Length: 335
Length: 200
Ligand SMILES: [Zn+2]
Image (tube, rainbow over all chains, first blue to last red; front, side, top):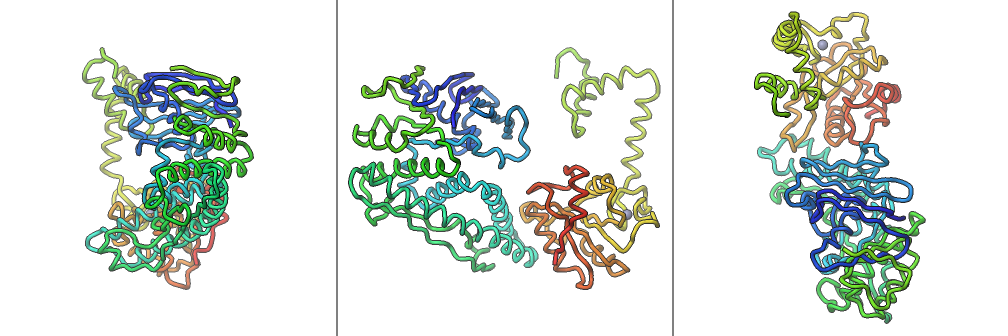
């Protein structure tokens, strides 16, 4: 997987911009505030329709602009994402895509950013989202199922908040649909979580440089619908969107008990595991988007991490200055 | 809007732009064609709009478009198979099915779909009149509601309320996930109607 060229309009600090990338390692250099991270963010957005640091696509619009566009020229196709008047649109090779679920993830990327620490430190919601995204990347069937499930939950929550309570049968019908789609997703996510745990454990030990264990705790939520209790709560209490997920280092919850160093190692390990799992699933290495994280690492860990992703087709790394030990054949782009 | 056009022309163009499918440029072209016309056409058009708006009502039996208090053309057509009813969301959904030319039964427009998000429950839909209609000689009901969550919920609700002796089916897959009837092409819709699935 490779990005030959990335063009943006009205995106973050760029009124317009265009950058060419080579296969292999590409350093994006520049002082703070020059927009290095925004370039990675654009690549991430055109792949996954979201940013890795902003919660809404709207936040990516440049000041003074009403819309933004990102255009990625990849080996086999050209992808374009635009956000205009509150609406997202996506083109594959110039053809407007009617079904964004088919266009999602066509360009496979794996971000390595400081925000990955939030996945390790944050609550179960962060880890669920991480696993759900990994599931969407490796099992494309689940993309439309996940959207369908969210839509059912939205309807069911609206039912629970409605006053007076509407027809009871509508509750039962929505519950039935939620269980049908949710159980299937739960089953598939358990598989993803299993594969992820195995891979992350291996990778974590390599990056840590010692036999430290990494494990995933997944406690699936129940499906016993209770109209009265759920009406009182004002939202669905059943369902896979409330499954408990935690990551543990040496058997202790990474979010609460792990040391800062262990958390950093875990953050790198989960992205490296994502890279390796996606690569083996789609048969080609995804593009690695590394935001400054390589620079923060001690040489030994950087070496270990680079060796894990060394077969990456393309790596885009931002940093303020090129590391002294960078290989000579790396491409450099200075902002 | 470009500067330079007189206010009344701009106003007309803005009104035309509210039509489905009309962009700023096509609205402007339509407005110019109207004001530059030398015959009575603009007046005839205005009259036709007002007349249609005043006369077109929903058919009291099936909910499709009809004139005045009359039954619609489809309900009055005695050559159609009155033992089969096709349940759709709105009157607009009848048109693509008719265009597909594969269905010869009658219709029943619900006037919406069950959607708690939009505050629409079964009691807001024309379900009562559907249950009355099926009592008189109807043998089969085809539920054609699209496969989004609202359509699915409404389909399941109907299958639980229609009398058990009826044959009930729904359109087969072939419609895109989350797709609505209105945007499906005739070929897809024809296939979906032919391969309809049993709802119970
Ligand atoms: Zn009628």
